[in-house]
Amino acid sequence: MGRIAGVTRAETRERLLSAAADEFARRGYDGTRVADIARAAGVSNGALYAHFDSKAELLVAALRAHGRRLLADLFDADPDRPVVELLLAIGRWLPKRRDARAHLVVEALVAARRDEEVARPMRDYVGERADWLAGLMRIAQAGEEMDPALSPNALAHLCLLLGMGSALIPPDMHAVGDEEWAALLARIVAALAPPAPAAALHGRNTMKVQIDPKRCQGHGRCYDLAPGLFGEDDEGYGTVLGDGTVPEGGEQEARLAGANCPERAIDVLGEA
Image (cartoon, rainbow, N blue to C red; front, side, top):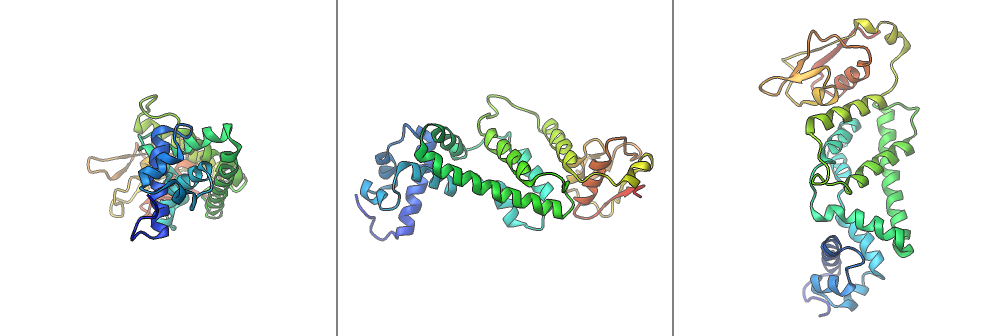
């Protein structure tokens, strides 16, 4: 086997990356031989080395090409979507079952602890992901979605820990209910929101929320972000729980829900 007739160099590289992702996910880094990847891609060992200098380089390249990057994909698809909403969407996905390729990052991280040849490109890869996430956090802070006093680098590190760490605990090892997980995420996001103005705190006992049913389109962001304040009716449209009075400690959730409603159907009353 050599170069495949009628296949471009770029197509051969993609064949190798796809085969590498499958082989590493199935056999693990240590259990995968270069020959296994070349055979799966339908090329010779020499053809593989024409594209990649080592198995370590191929592992990280496969992770870059075929690793799960849902947050980046969602952001690219809708860059005007609120960052907090993107984070919540990905956060809700974290406990779900994944395909084998989604665990490439686990193989890469484990291999990096034992092999400096893998560790070097993995440090670059993780650093790039952290820089991108920190930039996203700065966008959220500039848009008053997150407290500007928080370190973007620390926020990015938290996202890396959650995202990469979630691959280690699949649902067959430990599962969590969708509703309880969403409620926890909403509480965490609310804690990251900008602090309430002092004037608003003095008048907090008058804060209430209400939904305009004519504007509500049933996106459900209100009860995802503030499950203690909003619910859904039989058709999936948002409803206010009780009389809409915001209890002490729920101010940030109320503001977050109001700011993330696409139709601006939520009114937060009693703000100074």
